[in-house]
Image (cartoon, rainbow, N blue to C red; front, side, top):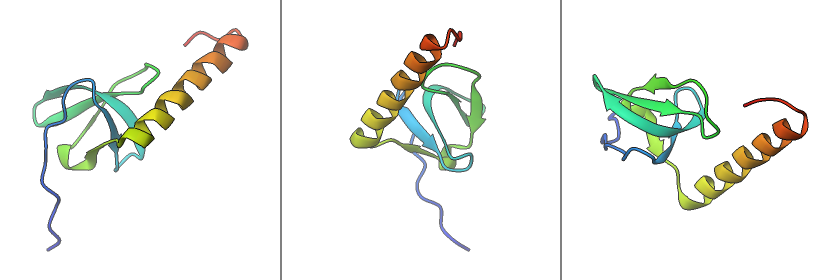
Length: 82
């Protein structure tokens, strides 16, 4: 049986990566043994198992923030509402 990495509780507001869904999100809450995440630019929250959520490293966090800001700016220039 393969061992799982130790589960750590990420703080609310931490940018994290859901390895199962391959998505980045901001930790919003911890309830019922699950981590609640929301996309960086806003949107619908989803849940993930704590063992599937990893903290983003500083460089990845900066890149993710930049990509989210560019996506919002592009949507604004097209007249879309986020």
